[in-house]
Image 1: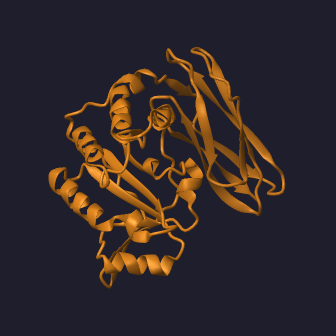
Image 2: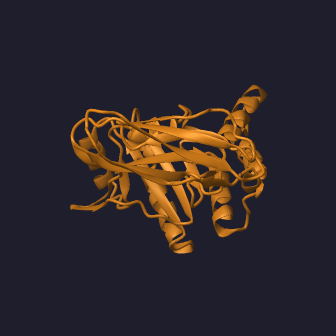
Image 3: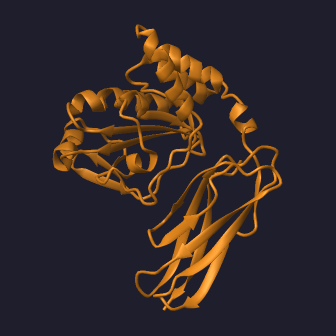
Length: 291
């Protein structure tokens, strides 16, 4: 991974001032290895000529090229649709069923944007993120150089940069996908192993206007400290409290869960834990009947 980081920095810094190098290298180091968080529900649409096709699930392949674009300003300059069409065709031809090119757009004018896709006959599936939820979950940097990522099967960032604008970034992506450039095992060595006391809790029947509490115990059974980066719940009715301190090998961390129904309902809520464990991110579940 360090080799990939340094190669990216070298590519990005051609003709740049030395004063920018430390800042960019810091940003690359900060983002490399992070796990991209995706919204729970995503609707993918292909605007091919007059036919609109819809997928409701994201295709999971060994690699994902994620390209996020907000359409503030010059649409054609930011989207680069002809170049992306050419690259997607090349990837599908060279590496069938190996790479998913995920195009996420946050348009300011949806109708105008969709017409632009149709005019360019861009038939790949795209996610029109009107609420900008992907950006909200990941807090992308304003620098557009950091809006395109190569992800592994677990949605961890292994390379950064726009391959349709920078040929050397494109070559780097293709070398990783083909196996010519091996991703360093440093990230794997930095992972620990965890054990869960349980991953599901049924809270049973209870009055909907009363708050219920439960907990999950996570044990660090690996050799390195466990660091929980974030815990995301599937709705605002579920709250999670936990220590932000690293959990040393042999120690436990308790996730304290509070659930307060907004109305009578049968519920099934998901809690996603992002951390440096081998199986992260992993999901926990609470269910019950708030009467």
